[in-house]
Length: 185
Image 1 (cartoon, helix red, strand yellow):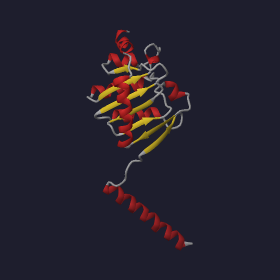
Image 2 (cartoon, one colour):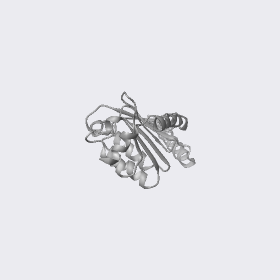
Image 3 (cartoon, rainbow, N blue to C red):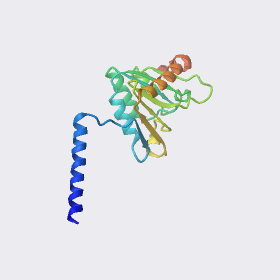
Image 4 (cartoon, rainbow, N blue to C red):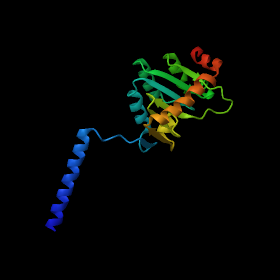
């Protein structure tokens, strides 16, 4: 039994040495994809962490955006010089708790979808390198009550595809009158 115990100590010691060596050489990489479930993993905190880490650009396309804490993180990014763009479903012009008017009042560029159907996207592209997507609406209900999911994808090729779609929405599929109405409320 003492030989087994000794062998386990040696193996455990080698694992620690390998982990320390890998960490010291910087070869430990963060996962390309992480999964967060509402009411279990706190996607809201992860969104805030990622937005607070943005240094260049934010491109956000959402169906519903009513979470004031997430809106504050978007505004913080804008205020520190991150180029920020928010594209929302037409329901967000009149929705009582929508953060669209707050964002527009803080000079965050916001555009409203002209899609005759629901603009049901829920994604954000951070620094052209990270994508947040999934069923998770940026709402208090998603955070507190709903069963929703969010993926954090750290791949530039996937971010480029999302950014291409965002550009199409931003440039061609927006309602100028509804977008202007945000600043008039």
